[in-house]
Amino acid sequence: MNSLDHLIPKIKRNLKKFDKAGVLFVRPGFCMEKKWLSKEEAIVAVTSRKAKKVKLPLEIEGTRVDVRKASELEQFTHDKPDEFSELADHRAELRGTSLLPEFDPSTGKAKAPISAKVTATRQKKKRLPYESPNLHPKPAQGKIPMICHVSPDAGWSKLQEFVSGTQHQLKVSMYDFTSDHILKLFENRLKGKDVRLTLDDPPRNRHFDQTDPQTMDDLKAAFQAKFASAWALVRSSPEAEKWLFPSAYHIKVMVRDGDTVWLSSGNLNNSNQPEIDPINKPQPGDQKTAKLSDRDWHVIIQSKELAATFETYLDFDLQKAKANAAGPAVAAAAKKRSLKKPKKTKRAGQADGRNRNVYVCQPAGTRRASHHHASADSRPRYLSTRDTRSDQECAALLVHTVAVYPSLQGRQQSSFHRIDRCGEGQN
Image (cartoon, rainbow, N blue to C red; front, side):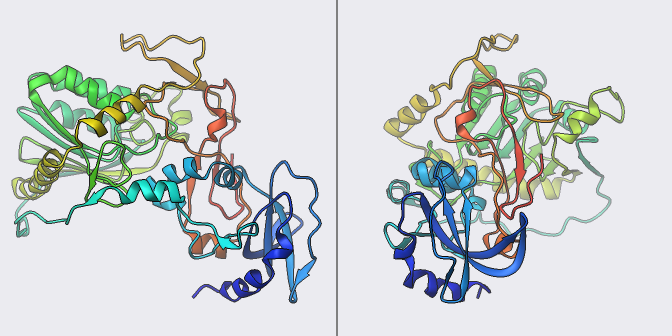
């Protein structure tokens, strides 16, 4: 039970007092004192960013009322619930209002984490029973060579070695693959090799060069008959009409030639595998790039026994995905969505001949400009925001996200914030 649950009955009994123009929602929370969250409990009334001062009670049944302007994230969830829900449907960390409900005073009901429209669309998809492959893993024994390394220090150099070492076949199961330099690594080093890929298609990360559908298309064009692929059967994926996984195919595994495994905490994205090698080939900009990147852990394991275990699961997922691939209508709709582009800038496409339109976002502070390919779908990107939740509220919500507010798409300058929905924003 959450320590703030006892405030919910008070809120329900008095919601009509908050049914005024400019009030978005009401929730349990804590008081703000001199822009800092205190330990005093409060009924938090969140008002529109555009609203003037709203006259509300100072307290309700002995509990203070704390009035706050909505963050960009909160405003977006109110103004465009369907767009936000499409994002939250694939990003479970953006859901969590069930533990600390937010009440809409105009309806008298708690806000749903996912809008009715998106929920209805999701419910139309058939759920498939998950069946594990007929496998009984056995412990691998003996001397097993391992390379344990981290990004951004050594991730890219070791990834190059691993991919380049492929003799016959590389099998990949991945959550996200949006880095152009990794795509080029695959195209250049895996010519004539068999490549197998099961890929999710989550909402865009803010460091993407191309989208997952573009990655898939480029690999198909590069390897043709040598390439086998399928979209992971994720409920919120636009490419899936049946699902095995409710929110994400959050795997990062590759098996090379049936004897070596690459296992990672990070995706094949720029933030996880920045194109730097500060150990062997240090460059002046490495530190700046590293500050923009994630800390990820990787291990390369040379073991036929372990490789066989991982390979069995990767093969099973690919076969299931191919057997239950979306029909022509769903595939066509997803393809049509992937052709939508954001507002163009004057910049040309990349020099590698892909000729994709790009837009520019200039992060705040010392962060470098990011030049990205155009979006391959119309789903919302992340939101840039600063919220005012306490540590207790944050723990209950279990929400931690990095975001770019959709209205900033296509602009030449914008501001990014790392936020944790408990009031501690950092540039």
